[in-house]
Image (cartoon, rainbow, N blue to C red):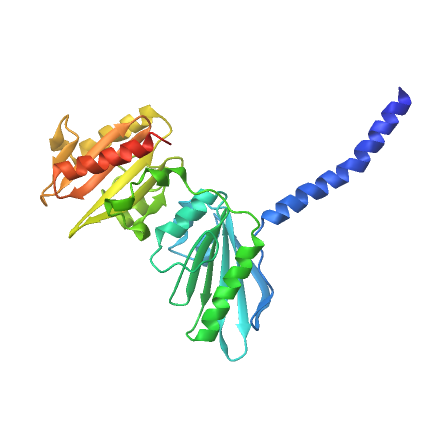
Length: 304
């Protein structure tokens, strides 16, 4: 019995370091890594780190964006090359791929750059997301050489992230195809403050959005008419029902028991609950158009 105990301890001593090494290797494989040099631009040797408490020391006035997406921290490096403008690279650890996509989606406006799981490049700024990371690379000047280096630096960081991550499932609630959805208008978010920056509803949080709820917003264009579809997922049906009543009281009190209302601008607002979801359509030219878009979203939500 004693010998079996000794052998068991020896086996644990032998296996334990290898287990730790495997765990550390797995963790390292998931990390986004800066290169030290790209196309002649060399890292200046300094790396700055900021967390949820210190983010405002780095980007005062814009830190709320990342906090609203539950980010863990950001690390920053600067690159220099004689006779060329400097470059700055930022790697934001967003904890989940859904929130990494969310940060990317919130300010998306330029053309796809083919880096990471989704990207854009314009005005010397490369933005992309991959896995649980959102990355920004900026060349502080114009010219083909710095633009090429900016893209190469971004690709090197992207390649260091071994695994991607899933998109938010709620995105599939937005009808697409021939519905007129503008792809670059899609925003995934949690905060009513961010929602108001893209489509203003109210100064108050009348939809009870918070860090654990999720919302997706899309703009639809039919001819000259633009409307917005907002789908929100709450923790449960009770939370959704409370938000529905608060929204109706604050945004469309004249509707009474109805769920559609023509606003002062002669456009229509429609709201429909389904289990833990709220479906809201703003700005349609007719009541029927709003109801049609709600039904299309409803059918897609049923498959989630």
